[in-house]
Image (cartoon, rainbow, N blue to C red; front, side, top):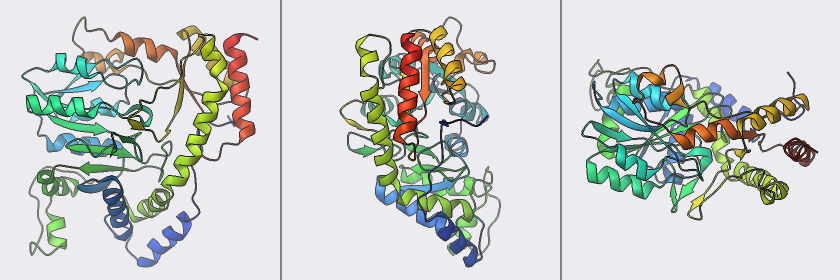
Length: 380
């Protein structure tokens, strides 16, 4: 279905085709070429990350993260249920058990107090997910990790170019993961990155990413031949992908400014609905600088959510819900502790609507969304 207002539309900075052509001209389109290095260096220097490895997706970066932890049967990793499936499935694939914990009702981020209660002798790591580009309470999570000897893996799939307490999301845990999927602020269609903030994890991460071989050491002249030395997989994006991404990353400030303007227009447009107690709007704490990845609204109940979504589509506006709680999913129930309710997650997931937001969204398109949404919520 062609929507008058699509949910998302990928942005083009204007340099993507030029860089792709340059990459083709260089004659090396496999992974870890010139544009891969340019992207990695830009991410490292701009966001204060010790080392960055590009990956084919954020899923791949998460799977690589848990491979580095050497999880075994019985090892537990604390994750929110209110997140994309691969936050948990990457744990399972590495041999561990996801432990689902509830979120805060304001930011919809993992609740540190509930995480502390969930820590056991089997806990190996905590995965804060920075929902909507709004930072989790990383100081609290890092304190818990230090106190209990745990690893922190930041799922910053939605958090590129966002900050908390002056630090870039993805730079504060032992590891961080980014997404450059088509739906993200900075995109190359499919893509991701592993942010390595613990220097001792760098060498092995490079081996695991290169199919379990020491090929990187061979290419840098550290060994005279490369061979199979560890577990691993093929986790490198092509140079064509990286060339497109480099243009996007260079335009990060421009893209973010456009998204912020649209985000703020939504806030202004919906104030009357807030005053009438018909909806709740996103919360960005004062110590956080968002990248305005998405704009979500919480309506009164699931019936209203379903009715509004259906009618918006009939009006040519593509809005969506977010997420089906993992602990209630068919696969997630295998790992859910009996009787462990996550009331905030279950409530929010039934009331949340994500509205269209993308850099090239016009004022007329946004006015249509605001007017139609308001009409549907108020019943006018």
